[in-house]
Structure formats: structure tokens, C-alpha cells
Length: 159
Image (cartoon, rainbow, N blue to C red; front, side):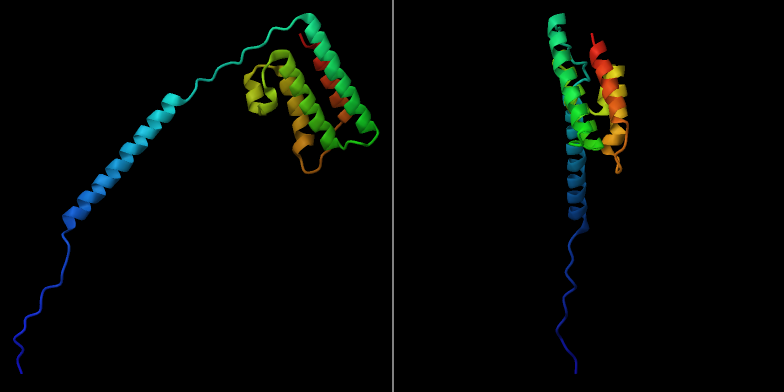
């Protein structure tokens, strides 16, 4: 028995529209990426050095007294076992950073160690390096009294 019905060829799409659409989409993504990259490069602020406030010697002396008193309080709390090693170092770090902020107007309380290095304040950098290990290590240990004395010397010697 013969069948006279002919079957239709399988349906297929043309390949060239898919390729063209792919090229257009990839080209658009590349163009968009280049625009975003150029925009981010253009909007990137230049690294600028912060302006230091000018203080009178009387103002600096008052600020020094305030933060030296704060260090005495940290030392007495540590001696009375109200503060552990880590908490004492954290309070010292906050104390010296607030002192520098009040004297210079630079918000070093928001700065990392690398940001502080860029400020070219070697005394502050040395203190923060001294605080980092006891402040962030798993087992906090360090010579708190020695660090308090170093901090006092930095504050007393600040000009």
C-alpha cells in the first residue's frame, strides 16, 4: 500500500537573525561598560590632603589637659580591673584619635592605618601600630601602662 501524502520538511529558523541579535547585545554591553568605566574615572575625586585647623596655644593646652585627664581615667579603670587589655587599648585609640581631631580638625577616627600613614603624622602612626595587635588579636595582651605613657608623651609633645 502506497501513501500519497508527502511529509513536510522539519521547520527551522534562520541562523543569521540570531547571530545579528547576539552581536548587537554584546556590542551594547561593551559600550555600556566603557561608558560606566569612563564615568567612574571622571568622578573619582583626587586624593587631597586635609586642611589642618589653626589653634591658639591656649586652645591646644586646654585640649591637651582634657585628653590627658581621659588617659588618667583609662589608667585608673585598668588598674581597678574595670577594663581589660582590649578595652583599654580601644579606649586609648579613641582618645588619641579624638585628640588629633580636636587639635587638627582631621577626622582620623574614621581613618585606617594606611590612611594615617598618608597624613604624615609619624607619632600618631606609631601609636596606632602599637594599639593594633592588642586591640584586634584573638588573645589580647600588651603593656597597657607603657602604651598609656607613650600616648601621654605624644599628647604632651604635640604642637
